[in-house]
Image 1 (cartoon, rainbow, N blue to C red):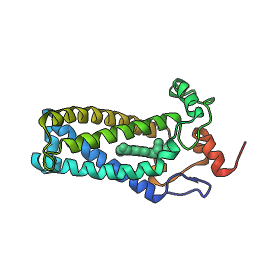
Image 2 (image 1 turned 135 degrees about the vertical axis):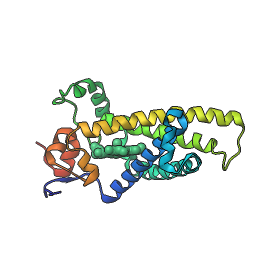
Image 3 (image 1 turned 90 degrees about the horizontal axis):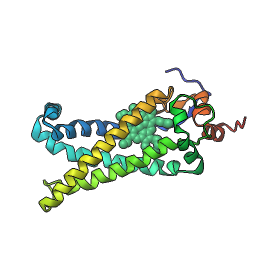
Image 4 (image 1 turned 180 degrees about the vertical axis):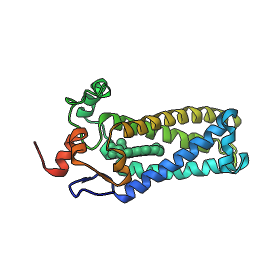
Length: 208
Ligand code: HEM
């Protein structure tokens, strides 16, 4: 892709590689997890070499995603601390959804919605990891009541995570010029000024 030297760097190559590794693990986990969830999805096990292989691989991919997610958490948590201006943004979120976003409060690198989504993902990931380990009978033989409770928690957290990621991908596509941030690492100045003016001012020193 032709780069404009005036574009702003939003993600480094290692941040992008980390993000996509987590994204690929998420897709594999959602497909294999749905196969266990309902018989209608069982044919998805063919993608992983059949039922037993799907059952063996799913928890290991879960560990990989958790490790990648912890790395991402360490990179991004400070940028996702919720501030007064984010609460103001969240109060006005309806205007944003209606496409009437010209007088939304100024935002830093991430807006209030992205930050709430970030912490939602953190909660779902933690619940998925804890409940997943508790029900991993190949390694731990815990009391059946605990395994059953963990299974319910795992399903609830998985539905939460899938819902949040659908929202995340929808918002990334809906806000034109965002996907390229995670593909090439850069965004245009116009994009930054419109959606994250505080971050734009920090990056460029342009205070107009
Ligand atoms: C698989 C499809 C996915 C797509 C198309 C996608 C797309 C994107 C894009 C375009 C950005 C940049 C947004 C910006 O800079 O404003 C981003 C950021 C991010 N994504 Fe994804 N993503 C996907 C999956 C995931 C998954 C599975 C996770 C974690 C469970 C995730 C977590 C994040 C985080 C933490 C950020 C940084 C934003 C923040 O800290 O609030 N993404 N994603």
